[in-house]
Structure formats: C-alpha cells, structure tokens
Length: 105
Figure 1 (spheres, rainbow, N blue to C red):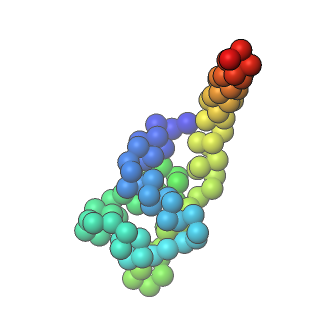
Figure 2: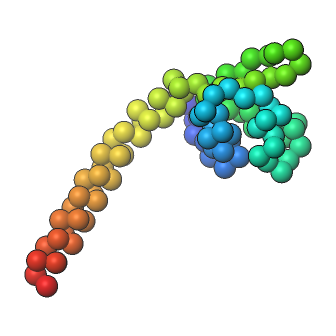
C-alpha cells in the first residue's frame, strides 16, 4: 500500500472530505461550506486525496466536482483486514475472560 494513501488519511480534514463524498460527487463549493478555511487550502487537501487515488476530479464548466474512488479505499480495507481479525480475536478472548469472572462471582 502506498505511503501517500496513509498520509492522505492522516488528516482529519481529508477524512471529513471522504465522509462528505460518500453520498456522491460534489462540487468544491459544496464541500467548502463544511470547513473554516479558504478554498485554495481546501483544494490542496483535495489534491492530496486525488494524488493518493482516493478521489477523482471532473470539470463541469468552471466547477470542479469530486467523487470517492472505491478502489483506493478497497486497498486500505484489504490491508486492514488482518488487523481486524486480530482485534476481533482479542475482544472475544476478553469477553470470555469477563464471562468466566461473572460465573465465578
């Protein structure tokens, strides 16, 4: 997995942008109302997401529209899958331990 994907996901602003794009493509101006920053700064965040392969950009006249790229996030999900399995096993062991304590008490 490219390090730029993790760098892109490391920013709360960029994670929020991805959240906003889950419902479908949006122009930059619609995204901008959710942030207290100038549009050039927001555009820089969108550029990072685009270069990491997490969003696509299309132009409609003077507007730029962004949409989520599922394949970029699928790669992240695939990489995280073994860790999810690890944590599920750890939590199941904790549940079993707590159940034993309830039975003893």
